[in-house]
Image (cartoon, rainbow, N blue to C red; front, side):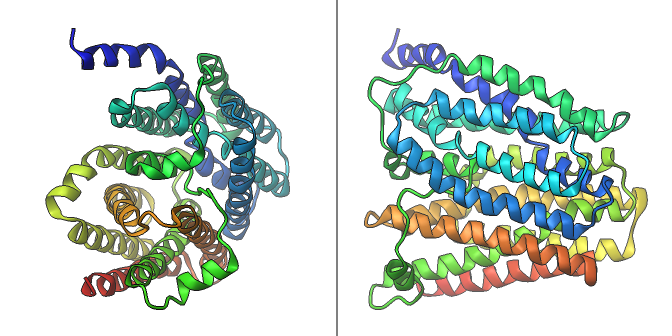
Length: 425
């Protein structure tokens, strides 16, 4: 038996804990869509949905800093994973009996706080329990299980909501969190615990970590450092990084507007919950497949072309959906949205995410990497937070079509900044 075969067999014995992410994501994957639809069922508006999403992102920022500090203080991996898994189950149970929009928004914030606790410990466990030569395989498996779980969760929600209300769906998802907790007992605390900083030294580890939770604060950037980022002097690398930050802020601001308004918009054109979940599932399924092909695609096409082309596809998809909301509704609207959303939110996002993270990893260099990633995380969080608030008022007072077209316009702004970045290369 070769060394690699022995290592692979060793992985299969030591990575049982990874399978806990599958039922966990089945329960957690549909929650964002459930929240938006549930608020609408309680006679809320898209503005109420935007408040819920803004609360989620705001708490995410705070929680990312808090759990990062806690993980640095206590090396226990299992406890932090348990907190996330149990938190989803508890919030789903409480949500099923919520009677007001305020309760739903508050519970969504609580959910955001709990779920932020697991992403870093899960990533560290891969690096602590698997031989370094097989880290790539370990992270790919962790990503695959999470993606499949999210897709299955949306599929379950689509089927269940065809004949049962959302409250029952929430209760049906709770046993999956219990299954995750049971499997998570397989987690064995590592004899040698790694620091969080080790994640940012490996491109694949960082990418998978940010996919599980998009905010990572290894070290909080000081006001002076933030000022130096957005008012760079001298070093061209810092000037280039500033352009990337601006481009990414436009991207996440546009994405925040679209993602917040989209589910209420689908209900506005007359789609039942089962069709809303079907559209979101279609996009997630395409995204899951695209993530596994995006690395090779980026290598074949080149980072520059991949980023620009994927952004154009996303911008065109957002604007097209805006036009669809003006021209089409009902069953025809379902079919058209299913196709366009799969391309814009599924394919385009997966390809752009992979290529842009590769670019970010290269541009942050080896100096002050934690602070630079802290600025990046702040940009992502702020973009989503502002985008969610803008979405509610834009869709309510002007129209959903305007929110989607504005999202596309912001993606085009991101393209323009990336063009300037590459023109200086």
